[in-house]
Image (cartoon, rainbow, N blue to C red; front, side):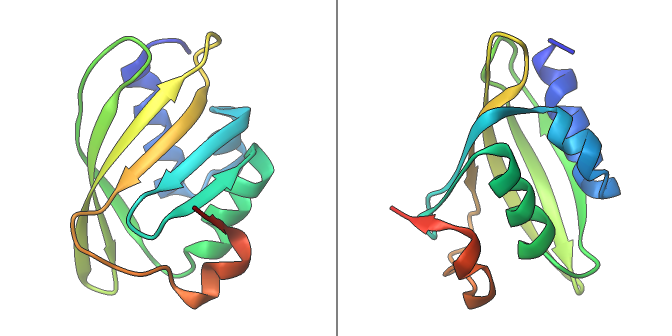
Length: 125
């Protein structure tokens, strides 16, 4: 899969389905995740999988509102909902030469601090 739109759509679909094997297959081994608001940073596929699996428990859901762009830097606009609360998110991706996700920068317009339950899963910057 090398089309940027397809990669990002597959990423969000795998996350919503909790298809962690499919999700992992879209990531470069040395993927870098950054969440600027909480200054969270996660390096590596295995660490990023743990961050998603352990860091976001519960019955949450994602709705993709828009994926734009082409090339190797497709952004997306999503809605994340959990316990009846919805929050919009903007996520920027960088794809490597093989079409895998090499970097993710996640922006959430509503301010928040990192939950204490995720502290052991991330570094700070």
